[in-house]
Length: 220
Ligand SMILES: [Zn+2]
Image (cartoon, rainbow, N blue to C red):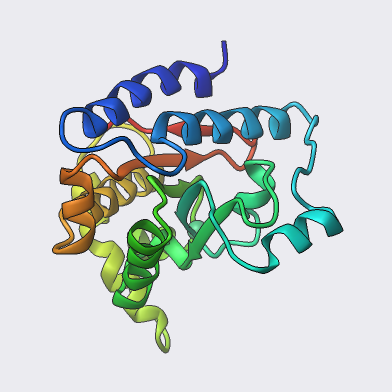
């Protein structure tokens, strides 16, 4: 059994917990189904069996008039971590926001709110990755040039949270950063927090392994 599958069970339960109770049935793809599609796509990619779905001229025509992606991904701008490739998806499937270190700022948050609230997407994945250069810069400290200092500043709380933990300091900071951003998103008022509260949005954290290609869902 892959780590994806093992982790998948845990997250499905968490997503269900978010979605239970409250109001009417969800209109779009439910979080459990969205996670399943991502997991299956990642498994194809890892096994070198990517099917490159939704990348045909027909699909382009189909989505030209409007979009209804099934998942939102907030990921790093790193060239080695393109969500459509590592989840084996295509046009119109994923609404992606990418900033170095998957840092959340107001413009990114506005984009995520648009996808969750306006487009009605019910799953948001915060995707960190192994050996993230932005997180590494924050771990190493020192003086960052130009606007990179804003990234480093935003990543400092993750570095602090990871301090003193056993294991690799950079990887611990990557994981802590994902957890902090997930928390920020879940409590972001008024839009995202309300969607989470109403069971219309599940927010989960994940880590991409540069060596194996595996996306591991992190425990809430
Ligand atoms: Zn990165």
